[in-house]
Image 1 (tube, rainbow, N blue to C red):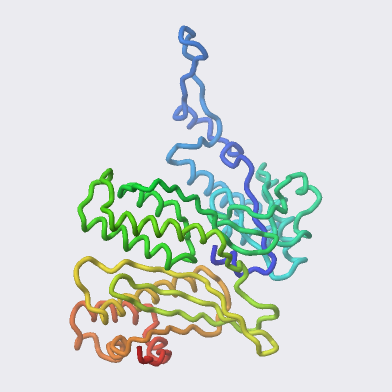
Image 2: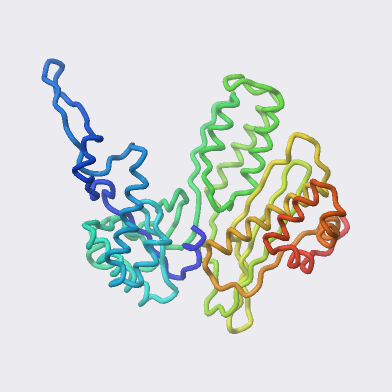
Length: 379
């Protein structure tokens, strides 16, 4: 999903009947037997499944491994498609793109040809540019649809925005099971709704402290808080986030990460600053991560340090996944205590602090965070 956001021209597709397009070795088909009879009194018939079967433990691996083998066998003839199959395919979903429209079209055609070599077909095409939907794709009604699900996140290709379509079930009286069920429905792999989900997790933590069973009704105060949260949650469906994180004619890209905390939770967020050839710049939200504060009391400075560690790990993950030429990375914190700890030797610090300072330095983030502190402003 992170790499999908760096392309100016983006498209997605689905491998049609992926499992059914992969044959099982005849010597292994005895392990995929099923028993069947049409009527109660009919004799039992024994069948052997000849293709990868949905529901078996090995199915996801076999499918992914087959795609990788296809790359090894045929990828040399399709250089643009080769990198896509190795990096931009998750199970049967293809999410990729290019910064140049002509190159994007070539990549698309190579993908079609490469999958054809393996007897597979791509369908359910969606793109943010009509030119990427060739004539053979327009037979599908949804090829240039207003919205499509992309690895669980709603993508609106015509406007090129991410959105959400949360289904909220309200009843007036709720149990702890209802709360957890609703939270689990909010799928947000990029943390675009971080502050909202964190608020729900804080309430769930309070329910654990009350030692309620899954089927117990929430106390009046907590039930009212949850009802109020659900009422506000419906506005999430009105929020849109731009998919493309860069700007036109960008010549430099910077990543700015912020770490902060409160008594209840701490978190980290990364923004992309894209500078164009005219000197202008655009800043867009890339990803965020949050944690609820532990039940055992932890001081605010230590929580600030935990947030700094979270930011360091998140930045390392982003740099590895994004595969984008980044000119500078910045790490921001308003905690002067954390900055002071970063300047000390680990042996001078207590174990809790020393371990986390060591993690930050191991991730090569210590020096950057020291030099990029935000000035502490009066509250």
